[in-house]
Amino acid sequence: MADLVTLFQYGFMQRALLAGLLISVVCGLLGVFVVLRRTAPLGDALAHVSFGGVALGIAFGFLPLYVAIVVAVAGGIAMRLLQERRLYGELSLMIVQAAGLAGGIVLVSLVGGLNVDILSFLFAPILTVAWSDVTLIVGLLAVTVAVLAVFYKEFFLVTFDPEGARVSGLPVRALDLGFTVLTAVTVVLAMRVVGILLVSALIVVPAATALQLRLGLRGTLVAAVAIASLCVAAGLVLSVFLNAASGGMIVLVSIAALLASMATAGASTRAVSRGPRSSQPRA
Amino acid sequence: MSAASVAVPLPPNEAAPVVRVRRVSLEREGQEVLRDVDLSVERGEILGIVGPNGGGKTSLLRLVLGLERPTAGEVELFGVPVSRFREWRRIAYIPQHATAFDPHFPAIVREVVLLGRVARRGALHWLGAEDREAARRAIELCGLSGLEGRRVGALSGGEKQRVFIAKAIAARPDLLVMDEPTAGVDPESERRFYDLLSELRAELGLTVILVSHDLGVVSARVDRVACLNRTLVYHGPAAALEDKDLLGRLYGAGRVVIAHGADEPPVHGH
Ligand SMILES: Nc1ncnc2c1ncn2[C@@H]1O[C@H](COP(=O)(O)OP(=O)(O)O)[C@@H](O)[C@H]1O
Ligand SMILES: [Mg+2]
Image (cartoon, each protein chain N blue to C red):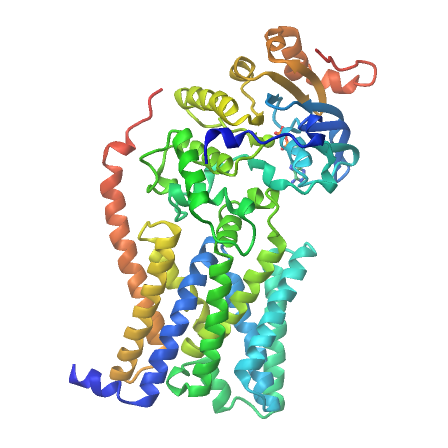
């Protein structure tokens, strides 16, 4: 316990925890919609695209995180446009993802191979978070949460009943595009916590855990934020104590939480299905 | 809001039928789906659309709802061509298989019914007390009181169906369009469904279009029917469906009607 207190006296640990908790809020909120809309592959593809942005930023000496956001948003829009050209859904994701990755790899080779900066984006950068990063994170967090809050009812409706939403006059196409842009921003933020390779896990796994609790949508969103925050905090602390990679540790903790919730939910479902509700309906 | 405020005063063009379909044809990828369909739905009417699978019932609804455009002909809603119709919040649509949505979707009855208010409230406005009251009343009308906090995925088929109807009427629509609402519902729930429909019409002045493949039940519970098998085989009072000959033409010998469609005019009972 004393160790834990000492640990949080370090500035790098405070910044990492603060950034991690802020990002968990976005990941939890957006993750629930990502799981329900079955767009997890989109998040993964955008993460790979943003590698191209990071490489671009590093190659030309801009702030990689900012460039990554621009590239990820552009990539997300490109995926949507390709999908509307009737290219098979997964194919359009794959093409844009490949373009981002390939561009990144070429850039990296041109500037002289994988350097420490790029490696840090691929793996566990959160303990290196600077105050300037925290400022950017706070800004994007505010925008993302505000957009989700303002369009909560619209996102809920298009997720639950897309056809009915279209008939009632909702701008479904604009909402889909908006959702893609939010995902792109969230992916880049989450990249700062767990690295490019594990981004989609941080978005999706806590949301999937919250869905096991069988709450309403509002309850599920709150639970997802709480679970994501706990997993990030626990993973961070564990990684420091064990001197292990923080991104990997956070995702492992998240997956452990998911498995635990699935085991609990499975047990209660079996108990219920033996109850009266499983009896045959009257003929 | 009181029940009296539900009966919206009629703006001038409200004398027109709620829906008018004129000589509508639809082709998809060279396949003829509908040919020369003429149809009207009057205010306060319950119209049943029946016909064999693949007869074009869902396609006709999608044309009426502006989700697809006809190859030929025109559709009018409240006297306005569908392409220029803007008051979509007056129309609620419950698609085919709506109740077969992901059973693990995390939404409770109250949340789903409230979704019916989204289009009415408009962007950048939070749902408020008036919306919650409309949702509460829709829940009550549909006999769902006591189930507000239950997850929709955990309800029975009949209950889920009533949740979707409550969501639809929470928007206080003038027209409710339902595609096969009683498919996979037990007979008791089906009876309750039609009772509820009659009540809603009396209470809210609702106009209803519903698709069904259960001729027997439909003919007893709707005002008029439209029998659709690529062409409109019959459009008129439901009582005429007792006619065995008509049923034969609609289902059994349906292909003959299509093959000789040009020289065998469809029956229009009025
Ligand atoms: N999205 C679609 N694309 C192409 N053809 C379709 C589509 N939906 C339906 N069809 C075809 O259109 C015809 C009418 O289908 P539908 O309107 O669904 O009939 P019903 O609802 O009466 O069963 C069928 O031949 C069907 O195969
Ligand atoms: Mg159909």
